[in-house]
Image 1 (cartoon, rainbow, N blue to C red):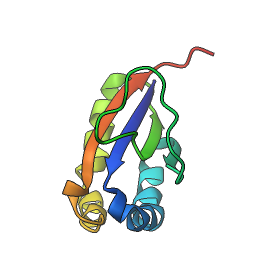
Image 2 (image 1 turned 90 degrees about the vertical axis):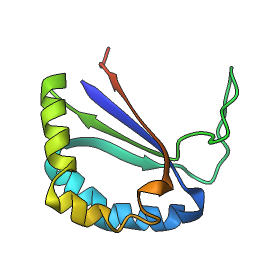
Image 3 (image 1 turned 90 degrees about the horizontal axis):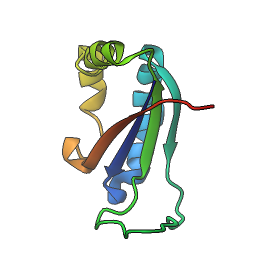
Length: 112
């Protein structure tokens, strides 16, 4: 099972966010979960077909975690992201929690 996490982070703080993620958040996350990858958007416009995007546009941060199953995800996600270690890291996110304009998680299975 894969958890795909998309964030709409404040674009005005995006460069600071990338530095924080690289130096602080990612080392911890990688040590705690099976992180498939962590991506940030390039300075290129999104290519959108079908219904138009809302005012936030496309997510500018995406990461994927591999889990064996949903019960493991529920237990481990809570453990990892409510820990004192994460609280210490997260207190330095640029602009604080309000800089995350939207966060979404969806769950997927691999077909091939």
